[in-house]
Length: 252
Image (cartoon, rainbow, N blue to C red):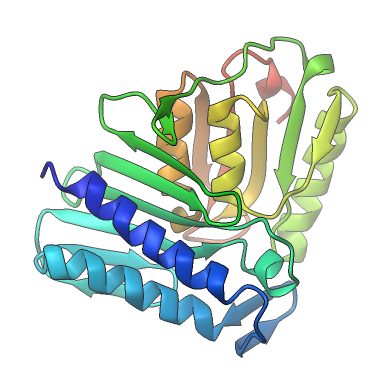
């Protein structure tokens, strides 16, 4: 399986080129919901990634945000978010990414993760047992230990119950930290924590494809992640990822 990381990088890079090339074009909306949007380009980008992965390994399975379960019954499952930060993308905010992870289907053991930001030209990678890297250079979480020095990011989900729970937690944390940011991409939030740009990320309701690659990055970079079933929507997760040094758990 030595080809899996280069394959994931190639898929993420090609997908990133597609979405960057279309960034300033008129967007075709497949579905518009309250606090969410689904674009035709989401589906097209997912198909591009799926085609690249399955051309190399037709026996592998694909779990994607836009197409559900695809592929074969092989030992490896890919978890794909073709555009993480679709609302940003739709509104012309240049903060979004492609997220690809791979894991063993039976054990759930993660093998690798790739996050590619096409607008900044940055690519994070991590393999099981290896260091997390940004454009080939190893990265680590921040050394900050005091909440008063920390910059954290919070995500706010789509449902009222998730928003209410998130607002209460955000209030507790924001009183304690130096600054807070709301950026709109879970995968990039995790990549930024792994790189030390942010100290923590918390969200009440998030899907697996948003975080599968980023969780690996944070843990490999020396950080910690709390991931548990969301109390507001079945099949989603509550997440808190941080540098492992801040006493953030007491504010959750």
